[in-house]
Image 1 (tube, rainbow, N blue to C red):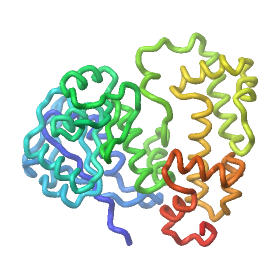
Image 2: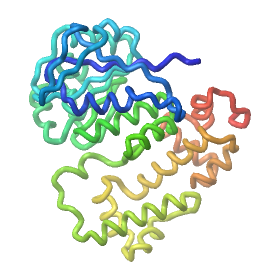
Image 3: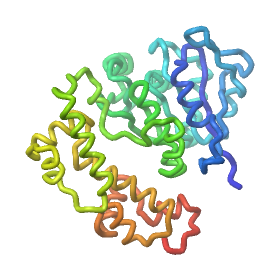
Length: 327
């Protein structure tokens, strides 16, 4: 039986209770009876015995000291109530050591400021809440601040945009380590989407679509596409279902979702292929057909460009390499 995946939540005064709750909900709830992996989530702090105060009269009680980071598989930094809150020097030192060991380090929302204080974002790309991008850029001039992503990675350091994007990042990290089905199981339990596409540009004080009718129609088109992924869908076909030109449809679709129709469709097909590779023994050509890629060659090309792996390697990773058809 594999050892539980070790996750460290780094705590110090000023961290946001919401982000602590997100991390705890994703990695601190036992869902092994539903097929999810076993996680060992620990709340670590410089002083492993003193409660860490949070806003609203809440307090987090750590159960490990920073030394526990030495054996962690993943280190997580919550966002901050005050984004200029200085992290304790022992915390910054521990984060530097964790990254130097090759441990995955991730920050939610304003937690990017903590990573920046540690110097871990110098010369690297990072994101935070769209209202804080200018502040991050001003306070830490060596950081390349990306304005419109939901989450990004640079040198095994992950940062996420505000609030709900922290959920997106957490589920994505589960997906990378344990596969799409594990992430979907957790997402279903949380009653949230397993993944969202697009960028946080879709949330930056844009006017909502002019008519609820258009939004409903676009949602219906997406639902139709999901039911017919195995078919050779085209943008013209989808646009015709809502009585729009292809150009108008693409514009409305991007405004509503933050991504283009083609990118969204590709994301759905990759996700469908991932589930088939994890759940079934179907041969590769059939996986490609059912997920809408048409051919194994096309599916392999998209896996290489989007996931940096092949369908066969993906199946071997997330089925323990025991599937004879995969080989």
